[in-house]
Length: 448
Image (cartoon, rainbow, N blue to C red; front, side, top):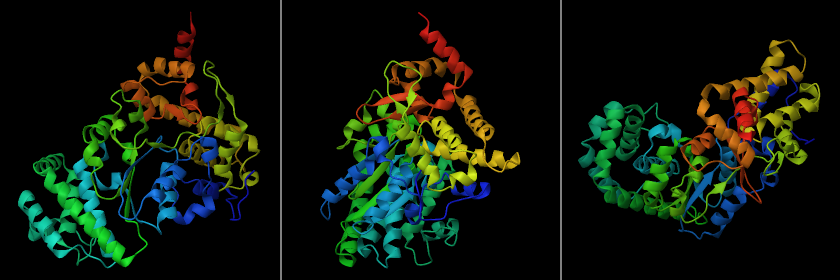
């Protein structure tokens, strides 16, 4: 059982609060972070850190980071942020906060970069070169037909965290355009069509600003290698949007003059188009924590105790197990039902805490765990189409997901999970395996 030098939750309410599904902030790393690279069988952080270490000042690259939603990617990215903040000026941002994640376009990402880099410089008391800034502003005024008055009317300086009364026109315009892209289909289409008329100018001027930002940062911080921009939550884009970003416009995604980490949906790895082949490096994958003993042609896998203990340690780091559970066996049952998926474990843990309190139990007992797992199972039953179950049964039998639209959707919605290491393989989410439709499909698939 893992030990912690910090006080751990010893009541059901405290345990519920401690098992928050949000990614760890840098300040929480020492208290809650658990290094799971050994049981994941890969080390995405170390691989990315090597790339960042090998870069000289002024070098830049595009890094792809992937894994299932909720597998712990954001926490790993925050770890990268904290490891490299003394060598790079790191801008961590959540794409879903900046644009419409269900309909993102690469031009949106350019606008986000301009907005965030200008804000980063302003926080440091720095500004873009006045000549470059004015040139870019005049171009934007010309193509968007916006001016200081029209932007001031629609932008609430006090409500927008990246603005202040002294912010330049360009910063306020970026805020307005991104708000329109996120909020209005008609305005979104108009803005994108306008920008796409002169993409070369958008790209060249953006890169001029990025180069100027690098110069200013080096003057103020001589040891700074440059900008590192982390685009988190891009892995939430639907498969078709992912193909637009990482296949149709792969070149444009790599043409910004700074180091960028993009999160990528794991489903795109199974696209027959092989879209990520257009990027220089392989994607860095955060797979599931492997709680199984792999067997290619065995549907019901045995458990790997080392993997289960690693999953349990995520909770043990936060919670006094003896005070919260009737026995550690119940925690291991939650670990088994998680499939090695960190967020799913946290969700079921919180549900078990709520259930135990509602039922007036002093501690979490087996029936609370079973109820929490059942609720997770029902959640999946509500959205999995019936036609997916034969495919899920085949994944169970073959340990491989089909390279088609259904296969991508099953990875995207986590009804199928990805494991990695010496070999790459897939397996149905354990709560999906409990489903009667899955069991019927499995029986049919096994019939001669």
